[in-house]
Amino acid sequence: MPLRQKVLVLYLRNSALDSPVLGWAEYDGTGETLRMAGDADTPPYPTGLAALKDGWRLFQASQLLPHARGEELDLAYLKYEFFFELLVEVP
Amino acid sequence: MTEPTLLTSPQVASFVARGFLRFDAAAPADINAQFMAEAGAVAEPVEGGPFGKVHAGTLAASDIPEAPAGTPLAEVYPRGSAVARLLDLPLVKGALRSLLGEAPVFDHHFLHVTYPPRFHEATAHENVSQHTHQDSTIDPRPQAFDVQLMYYPHPVTRPMGGTRFIPGTHLRKVSEVALGRYQNMLGQQHMVCEAGTLLFLHHGIWHGAGVNLSGDARYMFKIRMHASGAQTRGWDMSDLAPRNARRPIFFRKSPPMPGTVETILTTPEPWFEQDTGRLEYVNRIKLWRYLTDDPTYDADYWLTRLETGAA
Image (cartoon, rainbow over all chains, first blue to last red):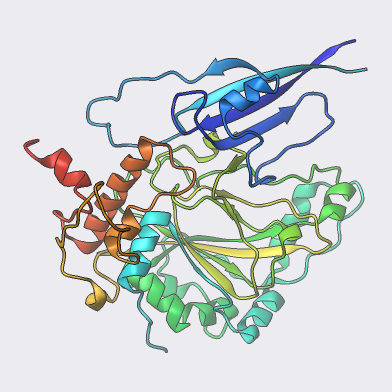
């Protein structure tokens, strides 16, 4: 059976994987579901750790980088980004 | 000509903190009906035709004028037109004067139409929501901001997929749709509203159009404007409490008094990260300093602490 990847991206409250989920995205490589911006107002998991317990495999986490001198107070993108995957067999 | 109803200090503080002000059913029914007539109905799609042509046809057929960027706002819309009448409402004049000062300048406008499923099916176009984004491009201005007025001329139901926006995101310096993978965030809001509802947005707020799953086209008219001169102290400041009434922080025996500028500027959004949420307060305070033209203002010592001995 061929495999397809499902991807879950979680944005957490701090760099700890067991901190609460603030933002999220899902992409379904099986084509069974189509997720899109604004399609859910409550997160799929309360924390990153809860996603691990449900079988998602963590494959990337954002780094902690020092703050450039003079730009310490500037904000841009969400800071604590975690990528998970599930490999699913498809017919 | 009508006299403007200026914003209050808590309203401006809320705009500083959250990046928007919402006024439900602010435009009367006759202006809404006139706008819908001037905007025109969308033509039904041609089977197999390009989706892009549908909206180009809608814009071309509307009576809304084209206008060059940089035109004084007061000169853009013909007298008596729906948008001219909208801009002459005391609330609208007052909000724009409060946030942009006298004589705002027109940047651009756009008639956003979110089409129902049959338009996408006919043109083999995927019917999905718009990725979340910040308008224009990276905007490095430290404090000056443009205002985007979003006007909802007819009722918007949840299935129509009204504008989605995330309060409090406006002070982050990002590059347009680089944040497109943020599908959902705690605290996001979806515009479900009565006809005539208005949103005044800081240009930096993260937003996107929702997917329309209803049977009707959804209209939203947006005008982007900027200041032509001083952007400071334009609202009704008579309600502003004497400043520097410092209050205890962290060790407090009762909740902070609601509705004060300090409380408004230090109220978090649900999506705030634990550490950068505090930087959001810092950046709100900087914007409040700019708007009040008071370079030493502080709320809860957030900037004083960083500035003490720093020079």
